[in-house]
Image 1 (tube, rainbow over the protein chains, first blue to last red):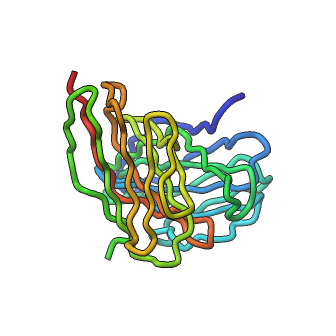
Image 2 (image 1 turned 90 degrees about the horizontal axis):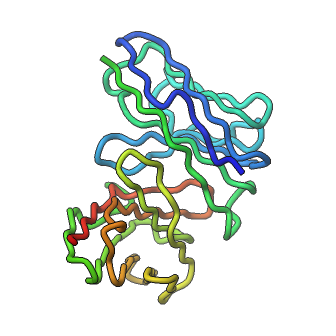
Length: 117
Length: 110
């Protein structure tokens, strides 16, 4: 079975450009998470979906960041008017169940490395 | 103040030795504790989770949790070159969010 996939794997954008990052979670997984990982740091939570509902977007750094999961499967993270500080690896993770079940492991995708010039 | 702190590393150990990784957390309401391994340029991979005080062993890995001291550790016994990676400690409270430390990079010398 396929794991979490993300595309593109690498993205170079000029400052001010808009970018869209895609995440395909494991089939049937209810929960989907986006994280931002800066160089030399651990992942930082951005947003959480349960099916198509975005239940938490408290980690999005600014209103330039927008995420959606319209049909409860594939998700897109969009960054408008990119800035140099947006350069990071964007990780998507999915888990089978909603909430915090004791074995509700998050499976991570390979990430998209975004470089803003 | 960062919620999850890890010993800064890098940690270099000879092959066959024990690697000891430490993590402290600030939120006393934290419920679940995870250790992820991340190879350079790759995604984090879950290797251990622990919920109760005490030790939990899985193969060459042992996680230790002390909620009173807000401390969780990971021991890697008989370290192998393939264990060379960054190890991320993550903590979860009553919600679904994982809070990660910055990671400790381990190098196992052959």
